[in-house]
Image 1 (tube, rainbow, N blue to C red):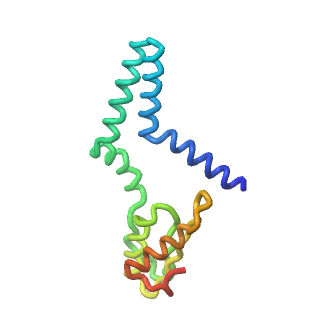
Image 2: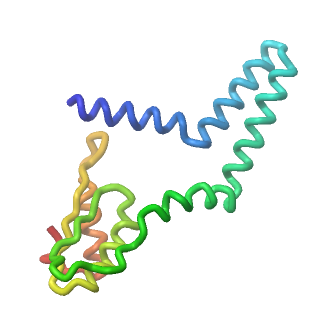
Image 3: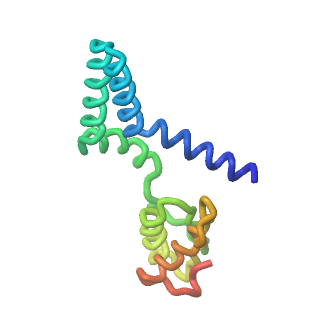
Length: 145
């Protein structure tokens, strides 16, 4: 039970500190100042809010921010000779699943282990959704654990 509470708190905090909510919070603060007749502060917050949202929505800028995160984990180029299993962690199912599929085709007789649960009391665990996706793209059912 405490793990789910921690998960919910983590999701709530991360939702607040994401770029768009930060811009919206700045805009709400600007509107609050506007209604309280603090026009100078309102203009500052509303301008910053608009610039913030426009900047983070601009694709080249957002790609520039994401690139270091994406590049920190490069694709596995040299596969160990004794590899038999591919562990596919839950979350971001499609991007990770494509990498698992690439490895599956390079490793003879490989088995893919899917993981992940159904967050917020969902009905279907992430592991099962990912397994179904892998089957659709050509992985044999008996090769998925």
